Amino acid sequence: MGSHEKHNCVWTILPLWLCAVSFLFLAANNGGPATVGASHDVYNMMNVQSSSRATPHSINHIHRTGYHFQPSRNWINDPNGPMYYKGWYHLFYQYNPNGSLWGNIVWAHSVSKDLINWKPLKPAIYPSKPFDKFGTWSGSATIRPGNRPAIMYTGIVDDKQSQVQNLAYPADYNDPYLQEWVKPDHINPIAVPDSTINQTAFRDPTTAWLGRDGRWRMLVGGKRGGQRRGIAFLYWSRDFLKWVKAKHPLHSSDGTGMWECPDFFPVRVQGTAGLDTSATGGENGAAAVKHVLKVSLDETRYEYYTVGEYDEGKDRYTPDNSSVDGWNGLRFDYGNFYASKTFFDPSKNRRILWGWSNESDSYPEDLVNKGWAGIQAIPRTIWLDPLGKQVVQWPIKEVEAIRHNKVELKNHKLKMGEKIEIKGITPAQADVEVTFTFHSLDKMESFDPNWNIYDAQKLCGIRGSTVQGGVGPFGLATLASKNMEEFTPVSFRVFRTQDDTHKVLMCSDATTSTLNNTNMYTPSFAGFVNVDLTKNKKISLRSLIDHSVVESFGAGGKTCITSRVYPTLAINDGAHLFAFNNGTELVTIETLTAWSMVNPKIN
Ligand code: DQQ
Image 1 (tube, rainbow, N blue to C red):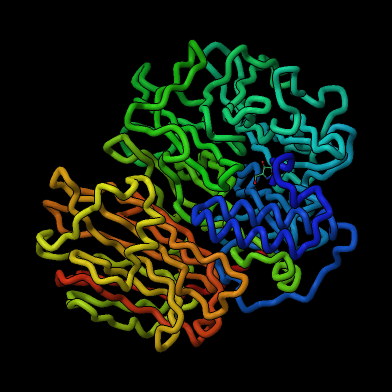
Image 2 (cartoon, rainbow, N blue to C red):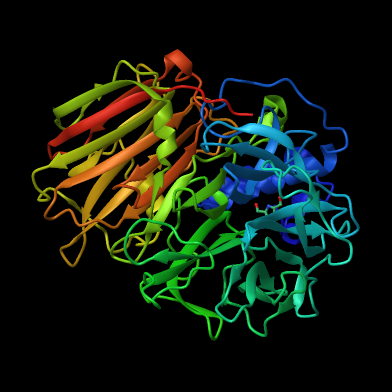
């Protein structure tokens, strides 16, 4: 939500159908992630109309998830301020207590011992003060020395959605649930837009980090007034109470538009362990570190990140040459995954990534009728790939505790056009890990030099899972109906590039996911996988399948894609799972292990 200044649907009194039609027009013409954004704004428009009359509707359970985080009803968006405190994981999230469209946003709050079973608490932060009277938008938690958490969040101060940053701290540090939060009048707001800052494009403070010079730093997302330069404004503080803006931002990039929900954190150059956000590397035997800067692009509703060097002395971040800054950058997830945020988990020495996965049924009426909207993706451990050019993500270990009914398949060969059904589990709610091998790359298709090397999604649209290839497409057909009238394929396809190397495309294609094609946004999400298949002719895939979501992890988590889908036949017992090969090269399923997933206790 957010850049309302540019979206006519939000503020005009266009009839709803016209907005919906213009959304479909955008969806048909852009073909890219921008369409996701368009849908959010249509929702906004409905909220403006409906927030006062929003009443709890009956809940439609067909596509609700079994083991993903969602409250019992209503709208959710960004994960906020995740942290670990006194034995409990805390998740706050943007929530509309009054309905299933965006609006009336508060910080809802749940706690967990294992990041899988969740206990709801009352909202932690909600509009109550002049500095947040019109909204309590996204922000982050920082654990200050002495185990003292604090939250920084964006307050909306007027009906034009002008934004300031605020600080809240727990009323009682002895309460492990951190139920009460104080927003002191004498210090808030802690940051207001100065004359150089666009006041409706100034939000989502990061977790703060403490420099060697004893000074705290935090970032606020923004864009240069009127222009499309995305900015991570940098703020400094000696005491965490009084914050001043640094002369220059930590980083900015032209042509990217508003940067929402920035996230900036150190990663070890070697190993998978996480680091505290204040960790600095390389000195006194400390592990060498790099930094990751992620931003969520309001214009397109996808995120990108870079890996680079943070110079603490100059307070500048410079992406490495191998990291593209801008719309073609690397993504944590090439699908429906937005406003993500990481935190350091000191209890298990890892950094964990949360991300919001919005609905893809496009009409606001669908959400109103369902009575709920939005889920949080399964938390992922995140670390730097050994080659140093990208991050790797893997579902947290704890999710394995809800696996049951294991089935296994070994050394099964799939000729061109063959598929095999994986039986003995509940395919609508499952976890599946598979490794595919093949003998040679000789049959690879050529990568047409006219194709845009960044536009994996378009390529997947042209060369979908049923279009015969050479090496691939092979993969899993998830949420499939018995006779494949509906299925969401997650697949790999290998191309020969002009320099005689290869490029691996991974697709999670929702175009065939449902027979109900009227209101659906069904993109062929895709990303390239940076793997060398010449020596080891082998690639792995894991998919977490949960009724209306398929979260997939290619090559051990190098490329991740989340799709939201709404089958009509492939629901509950009508859902099936297959592995398939539609390439002329014979593919072997070296191992496939699948499990049903039980329902944890969620809210
Ligand atoms: N959602 C929040 C904003 C943030 C946006 C409002 C990202 O703070 O920029 O609900 O989805």
